[in-house]
Length: 420
Image (cartoon, rainbow, N blue to C red; front, side, top):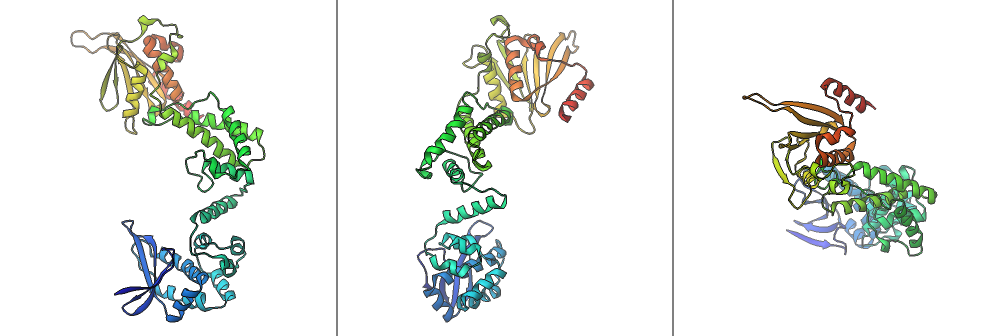
């Protein structure tokens, strides 16, 4: 039989219960192997209950000291009840100076006390008991998060000024640097918002016209890392030049915001039609364009493209790559069976092969092919080569060499490139 004897407004602060006639402190902490909350209990006396009823500060201090013991219990271990009981008198009954001395020797949950209003300055000076004079039953988890964030920044030597903090709050990264940034003007002190917006305007002007393209090699929603790095570098340089007083954290969050927004724009648009963008600038007329192409991957999956379809060959091919590309599927081929030529893209090696038929097979013999290899510079290089092949075939690729027919010579070239 379990009856609640005493509880506070906040459901997480430990309750006092009577179980089979015995007083116990009951608290929830951690989770079990199934991610369900764990509940722990240990025995207390009537004198402890009296203090818990009347003294919120000591109640919270006891909770803070017991929580590390709950963490030690893990997902299925037992609470060290002897260690928990040993905390009762030193925290609930002892003089304030003795409480502070105890907390110098044991682990305790600082964030829990800060969330319940503890004076941070006094906590930092070791005056924990005095810090709890401002304690409240209600919890402010954001206050504890801000403290932990500032502490982590201080550990790596980053000290925020008012504008730095305002910029991080504007992007939503003040508490968690790994959070995807977004625009949150309401989170900023109105007096600082105009300065924040001047910094944002500097970044927007710096990357105007820049874009982050798609990189289907890494999946349907992946974007080009080189484009990201290029935009981030451009924004960083412009913001540091115009606002040299900003710390690194503030500058990085602004460039992260610009790149994230550019990435979202890219992902929300259809796969680019590269040959439409390229037009006939390479000098190949409509007669050179492909009319029927076959796309295949390293798993034997095939897709046909016809020129009278609604989308261009490049767009269809990169859509095919985005759907099919994986760690064990990094070789893709575009073949023009009628012309007896094609290209094979090796994403794992940043290389490409162009394949042309020298002699058709006769009398049951295999055809003779010429295979030539070339190195590729990122997804932009691949897009250019695919677009060029679609417009003008293997002949049009000649200007995008050098093309190497000797496999050993090509491997040496690839190793030299990778060693740089």
